[in-house]
Length: 272
Ligand code: A2P
Image (cartoon, rainbow, N blue to C red; front, side, top):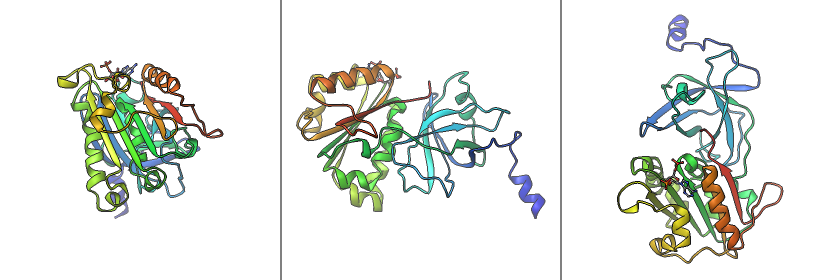
């Protein structure tokens, strides 16, 4: 029996470095040539706040390459989910995109980050602005009951180049809304807006454009941004963060941090 078990669970070729968890891949899903998601087992002792990120690596070298990944799971999840791009010749993603169920993924033991509810002062509406894989931390936030305890309305936006790239977010919201447990706390509080900027009717509809010309609020039939009632989290490319921050600053929002909560918080979507 022992030898059979050993055969079906191949050991990593390199020793596991100190200070990291070695976890098993439980699911992998490919969306496009450039996007995939995966889930790993959750170490019993691992605690994190919804919206935080961890360092992820593979046991494929003496000194593995680690990259920051937002945890796409809410803090109650029994497993840990991640949403990743595939970078051709990317030091980690080139290999990570080939993982299969049963493989080992390394994870450093400490999580951190600013896209957490604690870094925002109380408010009524929570805007979650994302582009590309920037939706990952918000996949945790929109599945966390605490989000709906703290806010009356949660507005998630995702902008990608193509419709196919919006699949992860669409499935996430659909599953969350129809899940027996989650639908109880989500109710009708969660709004979701998507646009594909290089395809079809939404061509050119960057989130920044839609905020500026008001189309975002018209489409969702909600009042425009107001720092008195609204809080925001932003996650995307550097350029997207800069442009969205500018819009929020101009409307009287102030950036917050863990040690100084504010009306919005920001984090770069990491792997590039
Ligand atoms: P666009 O197609 O107009 O460049 P990327 O794949 O380059 O990270 O882009 C992901 C999404 O983010 C795309 O829809 C892209 O729109 C959009 N985007 C890129 N830069 C910005 C920006 N500065 N502000 C808002 N959206 C942006």
